[in-house]
Length: 71
Length: 319
Image (cartoon, rainbow over all chains, first blue to last red; front, side):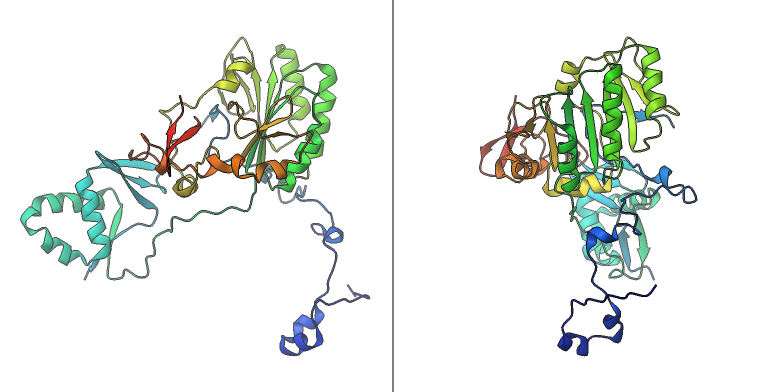
């Protein structure tokens, strides 16, 4: 992927002191990046069984009720 | 040879007035021990084994029985090193501004989607929605709410719904089972009771919502969890980073407490939860509550009843 438009957050003086790879870093708007450009927090990948890992319960009870899952 | 007798990092000792406990967070077990054993363990953590053994020369049999017990229960191990085995610091921090929320909703008085947006902004992880009303028209609204939450950072959701009949329960279950973030559907005011779930994440309780709202945690239940223990050092784990909103949109620190800190229709959630008055109970750790602070089980218990200040830095559970 070729980035035609490059903006850097580092000044010229900073870049002189930083490793060379910093010159290749680009600044992008967070809202345009999202997660892998999908703009979603959780993926729905079937290959990775994402749906099975979406949910986890709190280690402490939140509610007045304790619901026990059968072993 | 074996210079030091080290306590495993996941074993924590909590001392009480009459006795103490060793909490094993790996095996998730608790063992009661006499306070005299705590003294021996503390000395063993600070000094070489043989030096401590010499110190207890006049009580050899007692010392030996204590050491044998600790080894047999696998709380300790011999090693020539000490510095390499660093204990787990009693330090807890989390990025959420609000960790969990309980919302009562009867499809009027406030806009729940806006509240859920605000909760997501506060990095809330666990949400419980208690629907006070239900009919077939509301089914679509509930679906809309769940769709709205799909890409939020919530890690689990619980839904309370009034029981209508078995056909409705089946319909709701099949309609919403694809929403994997929903941990459980709890049908209240039900003729039957089923408090456990295996394959179908549906639970039935006989209680009505008024009783659910005012219920208290069973004091016999204890929690053996390292994160809970660490949080309990400086915070009240039940109240810490919790927010509740009743069906009128009133914001509370717990759904059953009377104190109201604002209304969601008037102020933003952030402006209410970041006030000192709202957060007061967050920092009332069990060490500060009289009657509980001397209990060896204080970091394993859940204290739901609000505490009131009696003297500076000391609270008591309000009646």
